[in-house]
Image (cartoon, rainbow, N blue to C red):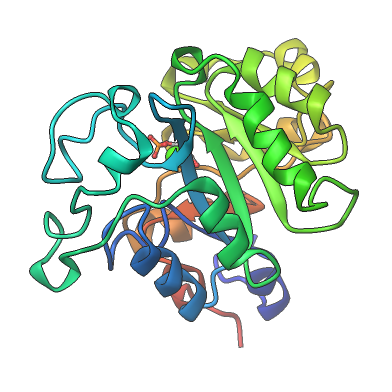
Length: 257
Ligand code: G3P
Ligand code: CA
């Protein structure tokens, strides 16, 4: 088969900005999400956790250490406390003053403008997080079929199942790390009973896996693409989308003339 992709194939590849356009701006901040919108990504990917006082916030690590000027566990901060932190300076001084956003702030700001791929991050540490996310979406009438470009996913597959029961009309995805390299067709079929997406580490993706995921009735958005060559390789393998820090990769790969 040709190594080049047709324009139609290019347009069909779903472009998911990982933690926003996190190659260009501090991950999981408004500047990264605004950048993804400006770059015409199809989705922003966001990581959702819970504060000590039960508020949903958007941050990747379970501690604030790497991406803010604070230290300690996300779950030990109140919302008010965590929003005092600077979530931008670590990436670049021009981003000083960026805050950790709330989940509700993000869905209100971006719904209807760009898709939102919501990851429940370490949900086992936050009992009730599935219910809180569902409540926020239902309150906004975002849980209806085809109502908005929303997908929910987690590495915790029990959490995905619980969320799917609460939000049966929203597409869900299972995240799969390197340990799933030898996944069987039976396991894929089991995931497909509640999931619409099988989103693996890109390093376990082969053309055969892509075919088997499709045969099971799911789509596949591998993560996390940080080089053009990785993106081009995944496009050749026939993936449906990529989760990338650099949304420009989807527009730069070779196009058949
Ligand atoms: O969307 C998948 C990807 O975000 C999962 O990995 O560690 O970046 O949350 P991580
Ligand atoms: Ca994530």
